[in-house]
Image (cartoon, rainbow, N blue to C red; front, side):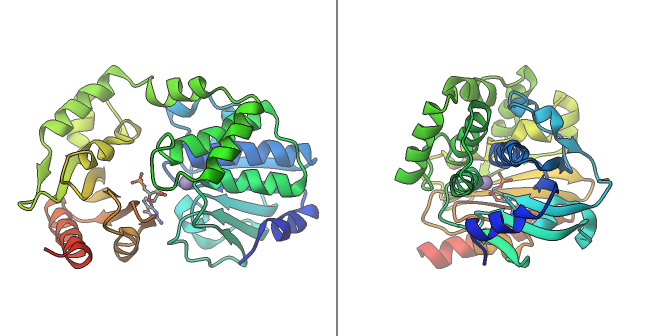
Length: 323
Ligand code: 5GP
Ligand code: MN
Protein backbone atom coordinates (compact mmCIF):
# COMPACT_ATOMS: atom_id res chain seq x y z
CA UNK A 1 0.00 0.00 0.00
CA UNK A 2 1.24 3.39 -0.95
CA UNK A 3 0.67 6.89 0.42
CA UNK A 4 0.71 10.50 -0.84
CA UNK A 5 4.40 11.03 -0.14
CA UNK A 6 5.49 7.91 -2.05
CA UNK A 7 3.28 8.83 -4.99
CA UNK A 8 4.67 12.37 -5.16
CA UNK A 9 8.21 10.98 -5.04
CA UNK A 10 7.40 8.48 -7.79
CA UNK A 11 6.04 11.27 -9.99
CA UNK A 12 9.14 13.47 -9.64
CA UNK A 13 11.02 11.69 -12.43
CA UNK A 14 7.98 11.40 -14.72
CA UNK A 15 7.33 13.87 -17.51
CA UNK A 16 4.44 12.37 -19.45
CA UNK A 17 1.45 11.27 -17.38
CA UNK A 18 -1.83 9.65 -18.37
CA UNK A 19 -4.80 10.03 -16.00
CA UNK A 20 -7.88 7.80 -16.43
CA UNK A 21 -11.01 7.13 -14.39
CA UNK A 22 -13.76 4.51 -14.42
CA UNK A 23 -16.30 3.98 -17.18
CA UNK A 24 -19.51 5.99 -16.82
CA UNK A 25 -17.51 8.66 -14.99
CA UNK A 26 -19.20 10.54 -12.13
CA UNK A 27 -18.57 13.88 -10.44
CA UNK A 28 -15.93 12.50 -8.10
CA UNK A 29 -13.97 10.77 -10.85
CA UNK A 30 -14.03 13.79 -13.18
CA UNK A 31 -13.40 16.39 -10.48
CA UNK A 32 -10.40 14.39 -9.22
CA UNK A 33 -9.07 13.87 -12.72
CA UNK A 34 -9.24 17.54 -13.69
CA UNK A 35 -7.84 18.86 -10.42
CA UNK A 36 -4.91 16.45 -10.59
CA UNK A 37 -4.32 17.27 -14.25
CA UNK A 38 -4.15 21.00 -13.49
CA UNK A 39 -1.87 20.44 -10.50
CA UNK A 40 0.56 18.21 -12.40
CA UNK A 41 0.69 20.74 -15.22
CA UNK A 42 1.66 23.39 -12.69
CA UNK A 43 4.55 21.08 -11.78
CA UNK A 44 5.60 21.20 -15.46
CA UNK A 45 4.33 17.75 -16.43
CA UNK A 46 2.72 16.88 -19.74
CA UNK A 47 -0.66 15.40 -18.87
CA UNK A 48 -3.11 13.41 -20.98
CA UNK A 49 -6.60 12.78 -19.59
CA UNK A 50 -8.44 9.93 -21.30
CA UNK A 51 -11.50 7.88 -20.29
CA UNK A 52 -13.52 5.23 -22.05
CA UNK A 53 -16.76 7.22 -21.84
CA UNK A 54 -17.32 10.90 -22.62
CA UNK A 55 -17.98 13.52 -19.94
CA UNK A 56 -21.74 13.47 -19.17
CA UNK A 57 -23.63 16.62 -20.10
CA UNK A 58 -24.19 17.66 -16.46
CA UNK A 59 -20.43 17.79 -15.81
CA UNK A 60 -19.54 19.92 -18.82
CA UNK A 61 -19.38 22.99 -16.58
CA UNK A 62 -16.16 21.68 -15.03
CA UNK A 63 -13.16 23.79 -16.07
CA UNK A 64 -11.02 22.22 -18.81
CA UNK A 65 -13.33 19.21 -19.14
CA UNK A 66 -13.03 19.54 -22.96
CA UNK A 67 -9.44 18.35 -22.52
CA UNK A 68 -10.62 14.90 -21.44
CA UNK A 69 -10.46 12.60 -24.46
CA UNK A 70 -12.68 9.52 -24.69
CA UNK A 71 -12.98 6.26 -26.58
CA UNK A 72 -11.44 2.79 -26.42
CA UNK A 73 -8.14 3.71 -28.13
CA UNK A 74 -5.37 5.59 -26.32
CA UNK A 75 -2.23 6.14 -28.36
CA UNK A 76 1.29 6.60 -27.07
CA UNK A 77 3.30 5.55 -24.05
CA UNK A 78 3.65 7.48 -20.81
CA UNK A 79 6.13 7.66 -17.94
CA UNK A 80 3.24 7.12 -15.53
CA UNK A 81 -0.42 6.19 -15.64
CA UNK A 82 -2.68 7.24 -12.78
CA UNK A 83 -6.08 5.59 -12.32
CA UNK A 84 -8.51 7.47 -10.08
CA UNK A 85 -11.71 6.47 -8.24
CA UNK A 86 -11.64 2.81 -9.34
CA UNK A 87 -9.41 -0.19 -9.76
CA UNK A 88 -7.54 -0.12 -13.11
CA UNK A 89 -9.67 -2.74 -14.95
CA UNK A 90 -12.77 -0.60 -14.39
CA UNK A 91 -11.35 2.04 -16.71
CA UNK A 92 -12.38 -0.39 -19.46
CA UNK A 93 -9.13 0.56 -21.22
CA UNK A 94 -6.05 -1.46 -22.28
CA UNK A 95 -7.28 -4.95 -21.25
CA UNK A 96 -4.50 -5.25 -18.65
CA UNK A 97 -1.67 -4.04 -20.91
CA UNK A 98 -1.11 -0.53 -19.56
CA UNK A 99 1.06 1.90 -21.60
CA UNK A 100 3.25 3.22 -18.78
CA UNK A 101 6.33 2.27 -16.76
CA UNK A 102 4.82 3.44 -13.46
CA UNK A 103 1.28 2.52 -12.52
CA UNK A 104 -0.40 4.55 -9.78
CA UNK A 105 -3.89 3.92 -8.37
CA UNK A 106 -5.68 6.35 -6.03
CA UNK A 107 -9.10 5.19 -4.82
CA UNK A 108 -11.52 5.10 -1.90
CA UNK A 109 -13.48 1.93 -2.79
CA UNK A 110 -13.11 -0.75 -0.13
CA UNK A 111 -13.48 -3.46 -2.79
CA UNK A 112 -10.41 -2.32 -4.77
CA UNK A 113 -8.19 -5.45 -5.07
CA UNK A 114 -5.03 -3.32 -4.63
CA UNK A 115 -3.09 -5.10 -7.35
CA UNK A 116 -0.80 -2.24 -8.40
CA UNK A 117 2.33 -1.65 -6.28
CA UNK A 118 1.64 2.10 -6.12
CA UNK A 119 -1.92 1.83 -4.79
CA UNK A 120 -3.11 4.43 -2.28
CA UNK A 121 -6.47 3.36 -0.96
CA UNK A 122 -8.36 5.24 1.74
CA UNK A 123 -11.79 3.68 2.25
CA UNK A 124 -12.50 6.31 4.93
CA UNK A 125 -12.17 9.16 2.43
CA UNK A 126 -15.52 10.68 1.47
CA UNK A 127 -14.40 10.95 -2.14
CA UNK A 128 -11.31 10.43 -4.26
CA UNK A 129 -11.34 14.23 -4.52
CA UNK A 130 -10.62 14.42 -0.78
CA UNK A 131 -7.52 12.27 -1.38
CA UNK A 132 -6.39 14.47 -4.28
CA UNK A 133 -6.77 17.49 -1.99
CA UNK A 134 -4.45 15.82 0.52
CA UNK A 135 -2.01 14.85 -2.22
CA UNK A 136 -1.79 18.47 -3.39
CA UNK A 137 -1.33 19.65 0.18
CA UNK A 138 1.50 17.16 0.69
CA UNK A 139 3.11 18.31 -2.58
CA UNK A 140 2.86 21.93 -1.43
CA UNK A 141 0.84 22.89 -4.48
CA UNK A 142 -1.53 25.84 -4.08
CA UNK A 143 -5.17 25.15 -5.00
CA UNK A 144 -6.50 27.69 -7.47
CA UNK A 145 -10.17 28.49 -8.18
CA UNK A 146 -10.52 25.93 -10.99
CA UNK A 147 -8.98 23.12 -8.94
CA UNK A 148 -11.15 24.11 -5.97
CA UNK A 149 -14.32 23.89 -8.07
CA UNK A 150 -13.31 20.44 -9.34
CA UNK A 151 -12.51 19.06 -5.88
CA UNK A 152 -15.62 20.60 -4.35
CA UNK A 153 -17.67 18.87 -7.07
CA UNK A 154 -16.00 15.56 -6.17
CA UNK A 155 -16.87 15.79 -2.49
CA UNK A 156 -20.31 17.36 -2.97
CA UNK A 157 -21.50 14.69 -5.42
CA UNK A 158 -19.95 11.64 -3.71
CA UNK A 159 -21.47 12.58 -0.33
CA UNK A 160 -24.90 13.13 -1.93
CA UNK A 161 -24.65 16.85 -1.10
CA UNK A 162 -23.22 16.16 2.37
CA UNK A 163 -26.08 13.79 3.28
CA UNK A 164 -24.58 10.27 3.11
CA UNK A 165 -22.77 8.46 5.90
CA UNK A 166 -19.38 9.22 4.30
CA UNK A 167 -19.93 12.91 5.22
CA UNK A 168 -17.20 13.60 7.77
CA UNK A 169 -15.97 16.61 9.72
CA UNK A 170 -12.83 16.40 7.63
CA UNK A 171 -14.58 16.51 4.26
CA UNK A 172 -16.60 19.50 5.45
CA UNK A 173 -13.43 21.28 6.60
CA UNK A 174 -11.83 20.60 3.23
CA UNK A 175 -14.97 21.79 1.46
CA UNK A 176 -14.89 25.01 3.46
CA UNK A 177 -11.31 25.56 2.30
CA UNK A 178 -12.38 24.90 -1.28
CA UNK A 179 -15.16 27.50 -1.01
CA UNK A 180 -12.61 29.95 0.38
CA UNK A 181 -10.41 29.18 -2.63
CA UNK A 182 -13.25 30.32 -4.87
CA UNK A 183 -15.44 27.28 -5.64
CA UNK A 184 -19.01 28.42 -6.38
CA UNK A 185 -21.44 25.95 -4.73
CA UNK A 186 -24.51 27.04 -6.67
CA UNK A 187 -22.69 26.58 -9.99
CA UNK A 188 -22.22 22.91 -9.04
CA UNK A 189 -25.77 22.45 -7.71
CA UNK A 190 -27.40 24.09 -10.71
CA UNK A 191 -25.46 22.03 -13.22
CA UNK A 192 -25.61 18.68 -11.44
CA UNK A 193 -29.09 18.74 -9.88
CA UNK A 194 -31.09 21.51 -11.55
CA UNK A 195 -30.36 21.02 -15.25
CA UNK A 196 -32.10 17.77 -16.13
CA UNK A 197 -33.52 17.31 -19.58
CA UNK A 198 -37.30 17.27 -19.96
CA UNK A 199 -37.03 13.72 -21.29
CA UNK A 200 -35.09 12.56 -18.23
CA UNK A 201 -37.99 13.51 -15.97
CA UNK A 202 -40.47 11.77 -18.29
CA UNK A 203 -38.26 8.65 -18.11
CA UNK A 204 -38.15 8.89 -14.31
CA UNK A 205 -41.93 9.06 -14.21
CA UNK A 206 -42.30 5.94 -16.33
CA UNK A 207 -39.62 4.02 -14.44
CA UNK A 208 -41.03 4.84 -11.00
CA UNK A 209 -44.51 4.01 -12.28
CA UNK A 210 -43.32 0.41 -12.65
CA UNK A 211 -41.39 0.21 -9.34
CA UNK A 212 -41.79 -3.12 -7.51
CA UNK A 213 -40.99 -4.38 -4.03
CA UNK A 214 -40.59 -7.66 -2.19
CA UNK A 215 -43.40 -9.05 -0.01
CA UNK A 216 -41.48 -8.02 3.15
CA UNK A 217 -41.11 -4.50 1.63
CA UNK A 218 -37.39 -4.37 2.50
CA UNK A 219 -36.25 -4.60 -1.13
CA UNK A 220 -37.53 -2.44 -4.01
CA UNK A 221 -36.38 -2.17 -7.61
CA UNK A 222 -36.83 -0.53 -11.00
CA UNK A 223 -35.80 -1.51 -14.52
CA UNK A 224 -34.66 0.66 -17.43
CA UNK A 225 -34.54 -1.11 -20.80
CA UNK A 226 -33.10 -0.04 -24.15
CA UNK A 227 -36.66 0.11 -25.42
CA UNK A 228 -37.52 2.67 -22.77
CA UNK A 229 -34.43 4.76 -23.58
CA UNK A 230 -35.48 4.68 -27.21
CA UNK A 231 -39.09 5.58 -26.47
CA UNK A 232 -38.18 8.55 -24.26
CA UNK A 233 -35.15 9.79 -26.21
CA UNK A 234 -32.81 9.34 -23.23
CA UNK A 235 -29.47 7.66 -22.53
CA UNK A 236 -27.76 5.88 -19.63
CA UNK A 237 -26.54 9.09 -18.02
CA UNK A 238 -30.19 10.16 -17.60
CA UNK A 239 -30.64 7.36 -15.02
CA UNK A 240 -27.98 8.74 -12.68
CA UNK A 241 -29.45 8.84 -9.13
CA UNK A 242 -32.72 7.07 -10.09
CA UNK A 243 -31.96 4.33 -7.58
CA UNK A 244 -31.98 6.88 -4.76
CA UNK A 245 -35.72 7.49 -5.25
CA UNK A 246 -36.27 3.78 -4.84
CA UNK A 247 -34.22 3.72 -1.63
CA UNK A 248 -36.19 6.69 -0.29
CA UNK A 249 -39.32 4.55 0.16
CA UNK A 250 -40.07 4.06 3.86
CA UNK A 251 -39.25 0.51 4.93
CA UNK A 252 -36.94 -0.18 2.00
CA UNK A 253 -33.50 -1.32 3.16
CA UNK A 254 -31.98 -2.11 -0.24
CA UNK A 255 -32.87 -0.54 -3.59
CA UNK A 256 -31.83 -1.88 -6.97
CA UNK A 257 -31.73 -0.37 -10.45
CA UNK A 258 -31.40 -2.73 -13.42
CA UNK A 259 -30.21 -0.81 -16.47
CA UNK A 260 -29.85 -2.52 -19.82
CA UNK A 261 -26.37 -2.10 -21.37
CA UNK A 262 -26.60 -4.64 -24.22
CA UNK A 263 -29.19 -7.07 -25.53
CA UNK A 264 -28.33 -9.58 -22.83
CA UNK A 265 -26.46 -7.43 -20.32
CA UNK A 266 -27.59 -5.27 -17.39
CA UNK A 267 -25.78 -2.87 -15.08
CA UNK A 268 -27.09 -3.08 -11.53
CA UNK A 269 -26.89 -0.26 -8.99
CA UNK A 270 -27.38 -1.23 -5.35
CA UNK A 271 -28.18 1.18 -2.51
CA UNK A 272 -28.60 0.46 1.19
CA UNK A 273 -29.93 2.61 4.02
CA UNK A 274 -27.01 1.47 6.18
CA UNK A 275 -28.22 -1.65 7.95
CA UNK A 276 -27.13 -3.91 5.08
CA UNK A 277 -23.53 -3.95 3.77
CA UNK A 278 -23.59 -4.35 -0.01
CA UNK A 279 -19.87 -4.23 -0.86
CA UNK A 280 -19.17 -7.98 -0.58
CA UNK A 281 -22.33 -8.90 -2.46
CA UNK A 282 -21.39 -6.53 -5.32
CA UNK A 283 -17.91 -8.04 -5.37
CA UNK A 284 -19.34 -11.57 -5.46
CA UNK A 285 -21.42 -10.45 -8.44
CA UNK A 286 -18.24 -9.34 -10.25
CA UNK A 287 -18.44 -5.66 -9.33
CA UNK A 288 -17.64 -3.58 -6.27
CA UNK A 289 -18.31 -0.35 -4.43
CA UNK A 290 -18.96 0.84 -0.90
CA UNK A 291 -21.10 -0.40 1.99
CA UNK A 292 -24.16 1.66 1.01
CA UNK A 293 -23.59 2.09 -2.73
CA UNK A 294 -22.27 -0.62 -4.99
CA UNK A 295 -22.77 -2.03 -8.45
CA UNK A 296 -21.90 -4.58 -11.09
CA UNK A 297 -22.60 -5.51 -14.70
CA UNK A 298 -24.09 -8.92 -15.40
CA UNK A 299 -24.62 -10.94 -18.57
CA UNK A 300 -27.93 -12.68 -19.20
CA UNK A 301 -31.60 -12.06 -19.79
CA UNK A 302 -33.43 -9.60 -17.56
CA UNK A 303 -35.46 -12.43 -16.12
CA UNK A 304 -32.36 -14.47 -15.13
CA UNK A 305 -30.44 -11.47 -13.77
CA UNK A 306 -33.42 -10.27 -11.74
CA UNK A 307 -33.99 -13.72 -10.26
CA UNK A 308 -30.32 -14.05 -9.31
CA UNK A 309 -29.80 -10.52 -7.94
CA UNK A 310 -33.10 -10.29 -6.04
CA UNK A 311 -32.42 -13.75 -4.56
CA UNK A 312 -28.91 -12.77 -3.45
CA UNK A 313 -30.00 -9.41 -2.02
CA UNK A 314 -32.84 -11.08 -0.11
CA UNK A 315 -30.31 -13.53 1.39
CA UNK A 316 -27.99 -10.70 2.45
CA UNK A 317 -30.88 -8.78 4.05
CA UNK A 318 -31.95 -11.89 5.93
CA UNK A 319 -28.44 -12.78 7.10
CA UNK A 320 -27.56 -9.23 8.22
CA UNK A 321 -30.94 -8.11 9.57
CA UNK A 322 -32.80 -11.31 10.39
CA UNK A 323 -36.51 -11.79 9.84
P1 5GP B 1 -23.42 3.25 -9.26
O1 5GP B 1 -24.48 2.31 -8.86
O2 5GP B 1 -23.76 4.66 -8.97
O3 5GP B 1 -22.92 3.01 -10.64
O4 5GP B 1 -22.18 2.89 -8.34
C1 5GP B 1 -22.23 2.87 -6.95
C2 5GP B 1 -20.84 2.65 -6.39
O5 5GP B 1 -20.39 1.34 -6.74
C3 5GP B 1 -19.82 3.62 -6.96
O6 5GP B 1 -18.92 3.95 -5.95
C4 5GP B 1 -19.15 2.83 -8.05
O7 5GP B 1 -17.85 3.27 -8.22
C5 5GP B 1 -19.26 1.40 -7.56
N1 5GP B 1 -19.49 0.48 -8.68
C6 5GP B 1 -20.55 0.47 -9.50
N2 5GP B 1 -20.45 -0.50 -10.44
C7 5GP B 1 -19.27 -1.11 -10.22
C8 5GP B 1 -18.57 -2.20 -10.85
O8 5GP B 1 -19.03 -2.80 -11.84
N3 5GP B 1 -17.36 -2.54 -10.32
C9 5GP B 1 -16.84 -1.90 -9.24
N4 5GP B 1 -15.64 -2.31 -8.79
N5 5GP B 1 -17.46 -0.89 -8.62
C10 5GP B 1 -18.66 -0.49 -9.08
MN1 MN C 1 -15.84 8.22 -5.69
